[in-house]
Structure formats: C-alpha cells, structure tokens
Image (cartoon, rainbow, N blue to C red):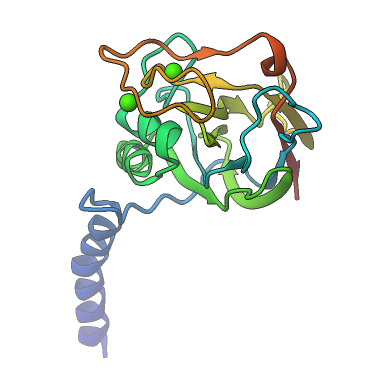
Length: 226
Ligand SMILES: [Ca+2]
Ligand SMILES: [Ca+2]
C-alpha cells in the first residue's frame, strides 16, 4: 500500500509542474491569469450619448461605437496615453474598430504578468444606447484600460487608461462614472467623421479633441462593484 502511495506522489510531482508550465506559457492566445490579492467583480456600463440631439454639428447618418476592448493591469504597462504615440493596436481600434492587434498587445502584457484579463464587450450601434460587461479584478493589478472607436471617424476613440478601481485607502471603489471625450489617435489625418482614409505618417501623439461639439461628452463609463 505504501509503495502505491509513493508512486502516486511521484506521478503527482512529475505532472503538476508540467500542468503549471502549460498554463503559464506564452504560446498563442492561451495565457491564463487568475486575479490575485483581494479580488472584486465589477460591471462597467458604456452609456453612449452621441446623437444629433447632443452633438448636432456634422453628425454622420449612422453614429455608433465599435466593440469595447481593454484590460485589467498594473502600473508597469500602459496601452495608450494622451501625449504618447498610438501602438498598432490602438491605431487599428481607432481607425477600424478592429480588436485583434490590441488583444495581442494585452495578451503580451498578460504573459509578462503585468495585465490579467482582456475585457471585451459589444459595440453600441446605433448611438445612443448602452452595453454592459462584467469582469474580475485583483488588487495586484487594479487598473483598467478600456476603449471604443467613434464610428464613423478617421482615428477617433473614447477610452480610459490606467484607471484605478482602488481608492486612496486601498479599498475598492463602489461606483465610479467617467465622462468620455474624444481622443485623436494621431494615425489618420481626416478632419471630419466621414473623411476618406488619410494615414498620418509619421504619426502624431494622441490628443483630446476640443471645441464645439467635442466639448460635450460622447458617452460615459460607469463602473459598479457587484
Ligand atoms: Ca487624427
Ligand atoms: Ca493610419
């Protein structure tokens, strides 16, 4: 009987490391991160406000927003920021609404331990409207980045980056609403919602657009702890 127990333990010792390696490898999009530290569950609602009533100047006939894409992460990694240059993932999201390149960038950050989850959600089509997504966040990676393309547009998007869900006392915030204004990714030089593609080369920095209708929020993210 003892021998069987020893054999069983030996097999366990052999296979458990193999299992752990296969969970943590960086091949393809199979990264697994389990939120750690204190964890919390949040629902974020994207409330799209953009309409002819709120933003009457040059509004396109089909105002809408692309699929939500973002991450939970720590302060080591940043996926975009005002004054910085857009990554290929941000350019693709802001110009086409595509999420695969940005997902790859988030997966890379997961593989280095600096991000823990990819947050994806539906778009809002037409705007106004809303969509909600629920995700789990851990206190060792308590920041949220979340974006959506203003569509149609040259390279304009809404988003938050590095938004902490922990307050100054280290407690989870119970709810948080952020007004969303339009950022220009600096990767297309079109000047109106329906401009033809016009790649900006070399690219310019990400800036918040202002003046006229841009001074009115295009939407809000509301984070509510479950
Ligand atoms: Ca631009
Ligand atoms: Ca471009």
